Length: 117
Length: 110
Image (cartoon, rainbow over all chains, first blue to last red; front, side):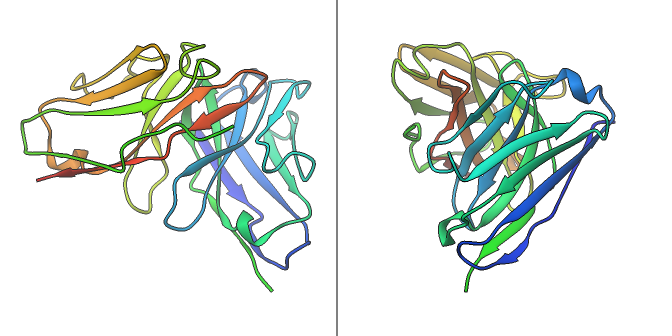
């Protein structure tokens, strides 16, 4: 059974940093592109970032480019999102997801990031 | 990276059909056959319903179908059931390792 479990969310002040983790199991982690997607309270889904299987190729939404960094440790079956220079508008639930054929077939339960002073 | 445009709401009676549109540009929906659709119930993670425009993952009822014409993709749910009441989002590959989601549509089963 595929499982994705996010952690690392919490309350942080504007300008602060946070690192999210996503522990994967039930599939060959290194074979799949992985995504981060966020959803502000009461709002829609927003794509954040994507990384290929060996970590050599990444993509970012314009809103996070230069502030967030996606990475992975295939030995630990874990996906990361380093979030720097956080803004109030980054407040959201952050999901990790496994991509298959351009669609995110499996999602974690999400971790809440709150940016507030 | 502008969000794809979806109608805010759609509705239908049980047994009827509802179709949701998802309008983008030639740089996303119109340029690639990587359009997917997600169903999200309140407080839950999204669920993949359609990928590659019209393919259904195993376990998704064949009442759900997807299509695309030009820069607009569509999701149709036929034979509506109470459990289909949810938010639906489209997504498309947008080139250069980027993706974009739609604005979301709340489907109500009357």
